[in-house]
Length: 65
Image (cartoon, helix red, strand yellow):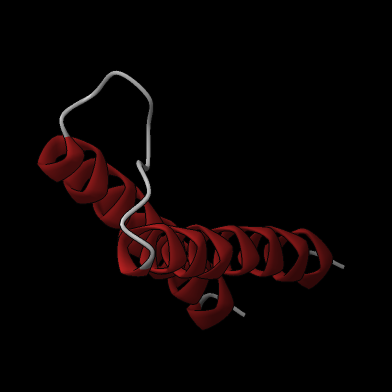
């Protein structure tokens, strides 16, 4: 019974992290701004950090099954 929420949370975090990293990669490849009005280096660094953290959290949730 308790594995249901872990599977859901792991799926949500993993999908969000992967989508954020893909979106950031596409924006960087097209030389488009990741965030308006923010330094390009800072916005790429922050979104990459958040994406990797979300992926790690998703993997952690799946490892608790």
